[in-house]
Length: 408
Ligand code: SF4
Image (cartoon, rainbow, N blue to C red; front, side):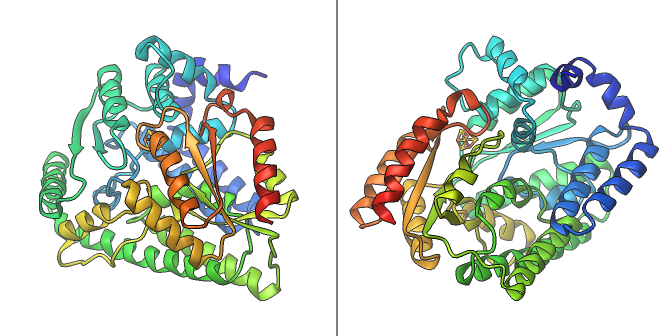
């Protein structure tokens, strides 16, 4: 059975099917039974199911946002934000992104563009995403979503909002505030500020668990960091929702439980991983583990911010966005890496260099030089997050193996 063909060619039938309440009842029962023992996976699938329900419902308004946009403002308005970059990664994990990547070439004219956004454009062209009412793109960490969202708007409609500012907190706060009140007006919401306060409170609660997880990981390795590369979708999507609290709490509990049981990994080589990693099926990470090498921390999990101020939500959210050091300037990324290598006692750094990444490709080699000059063994691996044709696995393994031998 060609699942990719069914998904792309029968997407209208699938979209109608997911509008039947019975579908969700059955799917929820299945998830609860299958993942009874694995609360972390159970919550992330229940969240994904609720997301599908909201974004394909005929009644609800649809919002698309890129990673790092402030999800809290959408949850405050009962909108589940769809992150098309995460959707591209999710489909890649199931081997379902090739057709979208090919379709995007007819629009973009070449494949020298970040494959995540090629995937977004292809999925939009194939009408896999619901017709968005609003598209919100923040310009940090990169401008690619501004272009892919503009193309999505041309292909599928919707109103586009760009939040721009790398540095200026007041300016950014005023844009978030304007966007929020514009949306409340458009949706006919009366008690906007109270709703936002609730979402901010949920965000703070989830964040408390998120920070606890980071602290626990400083002392113990109980799971490979590849899991956290996969959790990036949750990290970027769920703050401000009840799922954010449930997910990070259950992950914190799971880590504590493994520590209590003594399920502790003693890596031969401790690695810090920069950027995200391949989302398609690959044995690369198991292969790393078979060599005794484990990712003890990742750049994507290192995002942090001050507790959000419920009485000053817009400025607080602006500070959160501006202060992200991961995927930021070259200087921020190097300093964050130096700090994390020390905190998590990493022996070396793997810098994943995403093909076509306008934000990270050139800095990858400069970051390596800077880390090496600080005495930290580092290697750049050129690969791709979603397009496995740009991931020469055996070649990469040969280089990484030599790197591990040097640092172990
Ligand atoms: S991989 Fe690079 S270009 Fe692609 S979305 Fe991330 S930062 Fe932007």
